[in-house]
Length: 273
Image 1 (cartoon, rainbow, N blue to C red):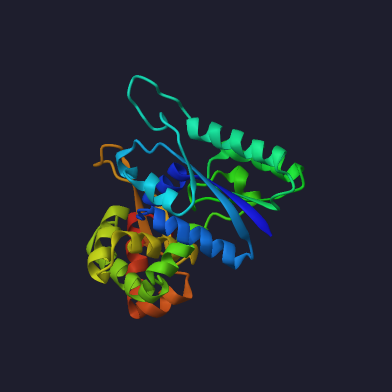
Image 2 (cartoon, rainbow, N blue to C red):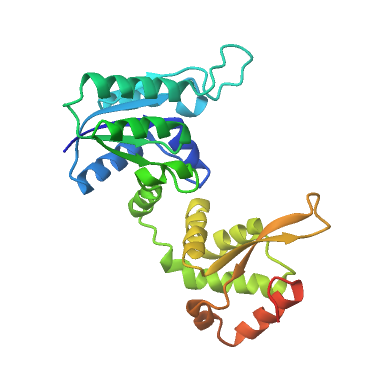
């Protein structure tokens, strides 16, 4: 099937950065190519929108153009100078160009790929589908608006990056359980920032890999995320990680330590006795 892709680059870039990945033009193009191969798509055009004046995107426009991507420099988005601010400028231009292509080149493409997590693209996705075209939305997990979930998945980029980096979080899970257990036996509670630091040092992994390990552990219900009240903190609360003591894998790793950890949790009031 013939496909055309529209990329809200700043949205994808920011979403991945929040998860510890720094997206580059080379990685993005490889990701799109991999997606096309997996889904038997022939992508005949890629349109990418961004404010290339941003310092983080220095020279990226040239890199994209060298790979035959049609770039659109949209000034003003995320530019907080007091002049020429154009909120959501890239979104508007992407939507207008996608609609123009949909209407004027209807028979050219079977599938429209929207790489974004911005809920403002819902009307566009609906219109494309109404015209009888397949529309797929790929955003970043945790940064994709829920209204777009019906049009695709939000795990593609992270799955691709983890595969490309060769990191499999499952290989560190057992040691991660041990590290978290050791912390929780020595501290009143384990704040999320402390847990990430300890895992980074104990596993000799990068921050992005540790973040992926934590997301994996949460999905597998090995770790639990809770809000914990602490009057000594300025905001009075913090985010903590717990081990799920009902999880079979946690039970196997902890062994005799399980009862001690359980007693700790009861003491700080995060589980009942």
